[in-house]
Length: 70
Length: 221
Image (tube, rainbow over all chains, first blue to last red; front, side, top):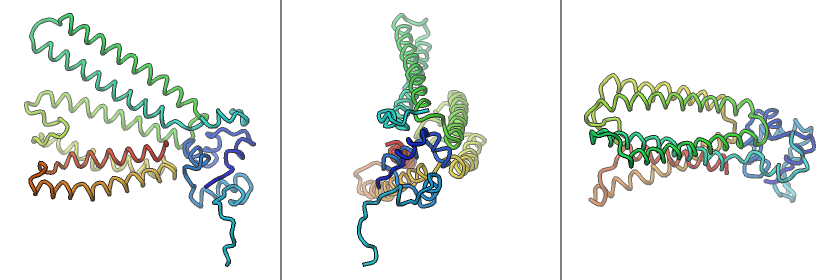
């Protein structure tokens, strides 16, 4: 899953450690999410969204473009 | 503070898997080289004569190798520490637990090697199934069956984050399937006379190695 976490973090000039501290996860977890190697749980995704004041969909993109109510 | 415009720096952030693996290999190399020195000294003592020039030369080479490995570990540790900023709270706790476990393991290993050296049948060697003194057997069982689960519970609930827990679970799946597939297959082949009798310690070691390898790969890839 693609995401904008690295860009959002860079805009705030936070290191991975600073973001990890705010999310209570390790630098490795931040790196794994940023590089798309690990998709966060729903609680962590909400935590990330709240931290940046955005919705989950504005940060994470699962590539789905269609209508879910066919 | 990292420069957000420096994409190369950002790319390098947090990717500590490779230096960590090299550090582990260098640590193992240090232990094995130290063991080789002990072996050379023991062999020289068995001869009953003074150390030969060859033995001294070999020991000197091994000491140099240990020095190089320790230097490499120091450099790698600095590289890891500099990656992605300071350690987070969870990482500090994780690191401290690992250090405490390593120290405890070292003390137990040292004590066992001293006790084992005084025994005739080397019951403490890896894969040995020789009888143990009852006090030592109980001590080892208490450490493995009581102390270690407490540390593991603390580690799982306080130190690791969800990404590491995920990696750990994946490692468990791979190890469990390897066990479910491998152990009965070995058992059948033993009954058919193809393989020697299944060895519980070898199965346990394989299980642990697969679990650890997958955990590491999933966490640091």
